[in-house]
Length: 247
Image 1 (cartoon, helix red, strand yellow):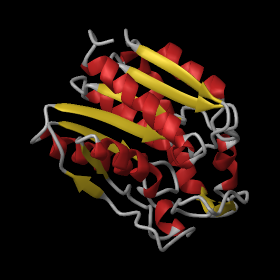
Image 2 (cartoon, one colour):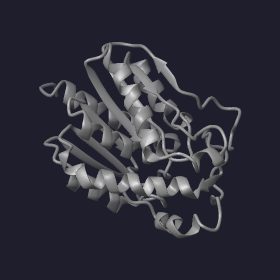
Image 3 (cartoon, one colour):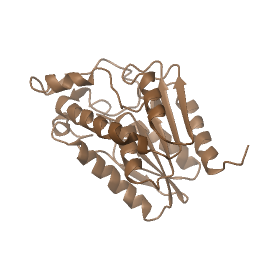
Image 4 (cartoon, one colour):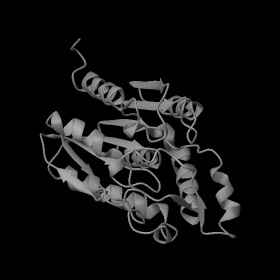
């Protein structure tokens, strides 16, 4: 576990009538989306983020989880928010963005989507189909250890196969997405390449959609050097949807 001292647990902070459900990526924890949550909370919004099953404990647990387990957790968080909030936006990074897409397909009343490095295609992920029979984990390449990111420093391979299954499910129905959608990818991301952002952008049926290609952000872009710029773009997109006549 990298940075075990950080708080990566589920959180829910009440604000106004508009709620943001934030979803972290594979092997990560809620630290990955906490800074974005703090940005919207400071604007008075309600924010919530579940810790996905198999995460924040031990990699062995992630090898025993199905993609349906992740989705059921996200769905439960959404239904909990729905009890008090009529306007709900989704924001997800990497695999979290895939889960947001799946949720928006199943719940068309969701108001909008903020997708950061959506993992519809992940470099070399298909290797997990073969490697899962010979090893439990694959070591990650050394990254920026100063980044306040809490999560596993290995890729559990059976869990990675579940991510592949989730990709297939989302790819099948992604054309059903009609909500306003912001897609953000980065030229510096070695995990999800910018072309994947184009694929998502072209596949969805939203009348209002935007694709942003960043220059310097790593895969964990919400904690990277362009984070403040990302937050500003996300806020601007939200405002353009919520107040379309304002200039």
